[in-house]
Length: 113
Length: 115
Image 1 (tube, chains in turn yellow, red):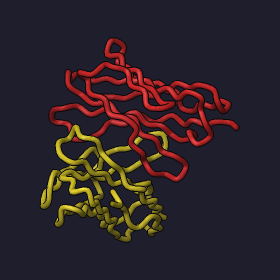
Image 2 (cartoon, helix red, strand yellow):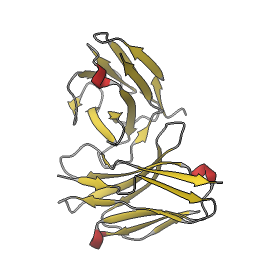
Image 3 (cartoon, one colour):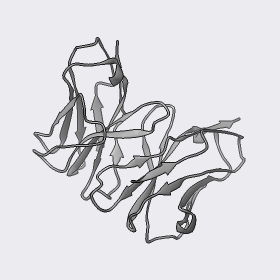
Image 4 (cartoon, one colour):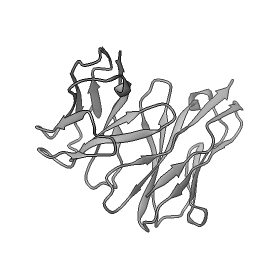
């Protein structure tokens, strides 16, 4: 049982490049989330999904897209990376309702030059 | 609107000392959930505890204890007999029951245990 995994762990992009971050969970959780962590700001929700085939915007969705084609996977895409998207990205999942405990992946450190 | 305040940005204590991390929250909802997460230097976020707004009992888990007081909107975290492995950033987070899918995080407290 690996819990929540994220790939890649590190990535450096040039401005304007695109990339996809992959989150996978093996706990059969319905809910999945993408957060970003910036210094002095805690974590902020980018997008989330309440089940396979569904996605919704969070607090800071601009510049990102997501897809949840399979229950266990949640992809975060950057179509045209900007330096402001330099951050650490965390994926999380929870079993059922919003109030359930969220379990986090190890994070992806992204630098946009 | 909801908010979590962790006023202590950084704390340093000598090993074996007790230390308390403060968390003050704001919400208009009567049903809500409070969490503590630990982020060690390796970077992952480790879940420590979840408490709902109807359960004001304090909790103890080994050297960790949590003091939930609705009267002061606080959910403080105490580490007894601190150890070097406790060095980490600790986040308090809030989630409400209705119409709010996200965890609202505080800005974290960096705890350093000096050997």
